[in-house]
Image (tube, rainbow, N blue to C red):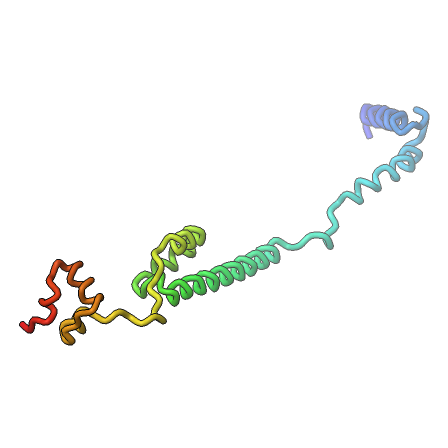
Length: 161
């Protein structure tokens, strides 16, 4: 080493010795011996590869998780729309719309179901159609009600045209 470098190095070793609590006349070996235990914790701070997972593995796990969540949501959507169809709240033509709405905003679809008119209960007998009254010439209360709604006289039901 050139003389200036030796003097600089010696000055550095003296400053380091004082910083470590050693006498300024300590040798470089004494300084290294005192410095070694202080460097060990810094080496321990290096990341432990056993505690970390490769990015590709995490990406695969996230993709699998997202696929499972999507599949579960799709199954729930299908079940909700199918129930609404079976209960009579939506028609076959509304299925695509209902599915899209339920996928994008399930709460909005549930609100639609709460606010939709109550479907007709198909387990109850249907009232006889108007044509049945005409064919039978029925003078019942139902026939009178139909006539009043249509603005007709009850005898017009018996008229054969």
